[in-house]
Length: 405
Image 1 (cartoon, rainbow, N blue to C red):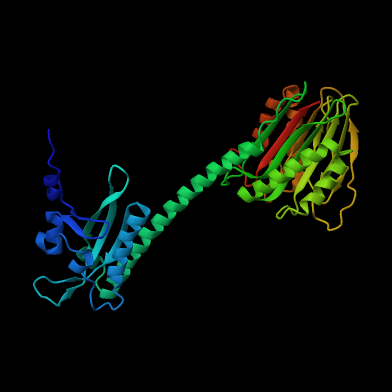
Image 2: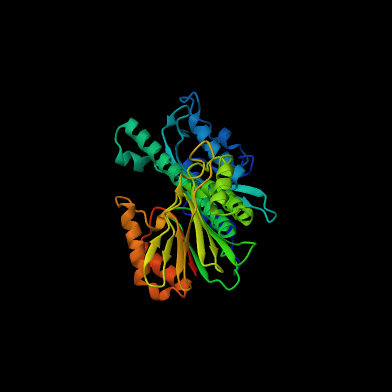
């Protein structure tokens, strides 16, 4: 079957005209000509605004300017543009008499095989009587038309924002994967890491975790930290601080010196103010944990006898919280084989309208409840997250590291 597209165009029930990129009429179907009150000879080959000039009653010719802006937007953006516009038309029967008219306008590009715009589809539907039926006074009619137009514009803005947010989220997810990868195996040591983004965030934030094999003996450094804020900016700062602490831990004499150096570095990073962090150096051969905290919630040590110890004996202000840098405190505690060490960020235990001690108590209770999972850090990490993070999520990010001792 061969389709006669010229006949289809003329039979379309909607009023459609075809314009060249110079806004000259290339054709118009019967419905469009009837609606405009013109013959084909009166429009084809003529410039749009010569065939239908703006009303002289509008000195600024805003009606023509708005329509032209819509058409130019289609040519520039290569996308469909829709609007509800007032465009007065001179009566064909009464020259010099201008009729107030309102139109629902859709302008869409038609492309050639090589991607150039060949034509613009100019579809119009008169809505003058519809608006008059819902708004009797003339001013109300104009206001309603403006309201329709603003609603359309808001819809387009929302669509652009939605697409922009989707693109930013893709970037954020890629950034998260790059900055918070699952650490590679460290010798025979078993550990698990978890990261849960805040509800409504871009899936990235300022929380981080890190594990580093130290150079002397059977030692590793474990750290978590939390940059104030959310989104890509906080994630960028987090990446700088995480890398700096990882490198510093390799040469520092202990966790206190590592945080001291990190604090001096944070002083030079805009946006790093009030960042909290905690790091622990685990010496497996001597069964010792040495730790230091910069304003961060305390690590938790689950011992083999089922008791829990909060490592809170070496806490100092957050990074860059004080102008003058000074040596930070550190403390050491012993452990036996079979214990478990947890480091985490405040999203795990802090809730609005709840004291932080309540969150810490819930964490220790969860560890005691799941103490049989200490030999499988992956299972213990899941159990702790499930117990403390509600299904609907929380408003802050959560990072967690579980290390089997």
